[in-house]
Image (cartoon, rainbow, N blue to C red):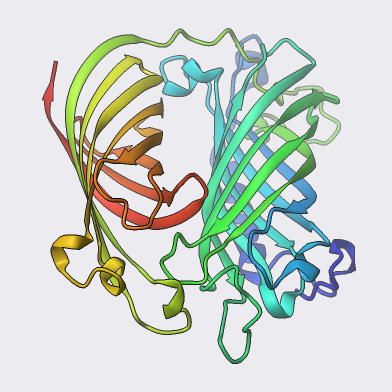
Length: 404
């Protein structure tokens, strides 16, 4: 892909060969499956929400960069543009956890965009998973929704002291991809929605390497979403058939969240590596460790609050604090968990009870948690200095020894 700083001047296809062949494989599998099964329309025509509901979406993005570095102003001031493709699943089972979130849908996607000079910043692409939460009743022709996406950004052009010294935003060709969107969905016709909204996109490696100002982009998006019933091919493939299954899910009233009032004590252990700013372009790395003791209270199956203490070891403090015992910090935090299924989004805010060693007195932890069993979970999180600068990325596991 060769961008000339404008999205519609791309010299090559937006879809890489691997993604193209992936679509061909999905189509082939779908065709083979379609030859194995048939459904009588008369037997299912009166069943509400019969079939498997899917959708395909193509979305365009444009907006501005929130850049906090010093060397890229000229190239990033032109804003950014992107296109993404999404494939989504709409589950219909009232017993599934999605029913308590307005029958949320989820899927996978591919992102391709530009955000300045590609010789300096690269040509960012991303593979991600997403979840879409409806915020309005299904009967509304125009409804509101919010969407969360996370994955891996690749094809970035990292900082290099010789070949790319002006890139003070990112130090690796790979980075975290994060997008949060809020907007509307207008039911245009039987199969098609017009999607519109505002969103925030973030690329960062969490100080795994430096530099790491990262990219923060905010702007507008517009999309077309095509709904279809994956079982229609088993009923009648004729383009002019009048034996049509519903193309879109008729969203019922959402199920109520389960009240829990559950207390627990949790222990979380995590680690990782970081670089200091003066180490950029080198292989110098320092170890980090987080030990967390948490009290967690679940109000419902969706909402929980936490409070606890952090024991943090940061080896990168060695430059100013050569003694190992001086590289430890102790903090306290409170937080909120938004839970869905076995997953949870976690946000905690805290402050140091000891000397902050120049980090700043307060910090945030934003994390994604997955419950492997009822008592054991895995978590990946980003801890910040103050509220905006990345301190480190941590990878860890936790367990719950007590619950009542």
